[in-house]
Length: 204
Image (cartoon, rainbow, N blue to C red):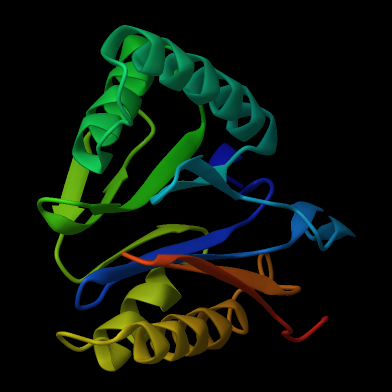
């Protein structure tokens, strides 16, 4: 088993019309053994900016602390909130610094830019970014997520339709992966604010 599959995870971000959503499962496990079902894998990095981290949980927690520190330094130096694209480059640089002994985590970034609108990106464990206008996925469930997201996603969805689409895609995907699931959380970001909802899923 790959070290990236040791804890299991499922993270997906999707763009809509002037809105963006990010969702993840809630399982914390060690290989096939489930330890808890309230593990947070998505972290708020700004008013309309979130990051989801899949991979080894110890590295996820380490990176979260690093991102918090770098964001505070950015706020002190620049005296303004960080834009999603700038934050994506920051995350990419932090990961690439450790390319010879990398953090075992693959980030998914979702944010709403005042000028450029919805922004999503995903990167591998050495920070090579991939930007998309539809959806990005990460974690042990990424193959299943690609299939259902390609079937469900469509252009210019409103916040309610986007929530329904990302929720159904995630729940359908985690049912086919034994290393993720056990509940889910969805954040929908609009210009008016952030709506967070928890989903119930199969507990087996």
